[in-house]
Image 1 (cartoon, rainbow, N blue to C red):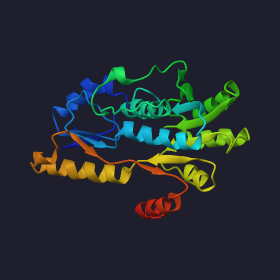
Image 2 (image 1 turned 60 degrees about the vertical axis):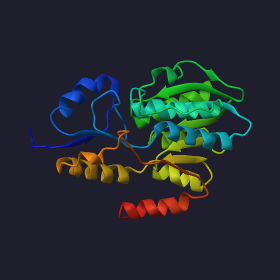
Image 3 (image 1 turned 180 degrees about the vertical axis):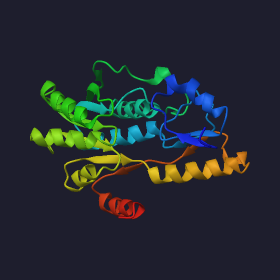
Image 4 (image 1 turned 120 degrees about the vertical axis):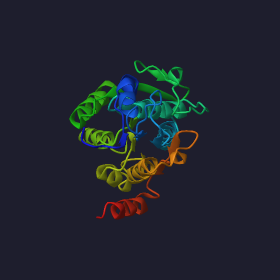
Length: 260
């Protein structure tokens, strides 16, 4: 009604939003970025392989905890496509599963249960706690988990605000450097913690490129160039692992892109 001719969206609850997404996609070119809705008629998904990114996060924790141990997973919500695959990637690495999941295809049987412990030879996922996108809830739940699981060895925070919340919980409990922390995205608190040796690392996306490629693809579509859509209906923007070895260089590049 306002003259929008094409749209790029990041679904919050892909399975339950298919009908709504299709109602828009039937009228104008519609693509997804960051989080996908593979069951919808979206024209293309632009983003990273969230399963591969989850595996990268798992590798960071695995390296930080060579003897294994109990691990807590912290995430905003599990309805989102990206959430499910990130979580599963971490779990598969820690449990020693050598497999590849096509994250842009619906594979519901590939996911471990969200309730209860998940045990492997060296690692045990004690719980997956959700906070519905609220940093203050993320902090409280991490604080509670530190009490509930006194033998905890590692934490993975899978949304941008999760690692800072977990960091604050660990700091208040005087457990920084005692419990390994790995995360997602490039919050300043997370990057500084990596520099200080208080966070093992983080897996970063490239939101600048998401935006750039989304507008490029939509413009091409409006110009009549449907060849801009690959056969896979997926444009990969690869994730990167940031650790103490490359954090300073990455942070400088990030500041440049943000004009800081």
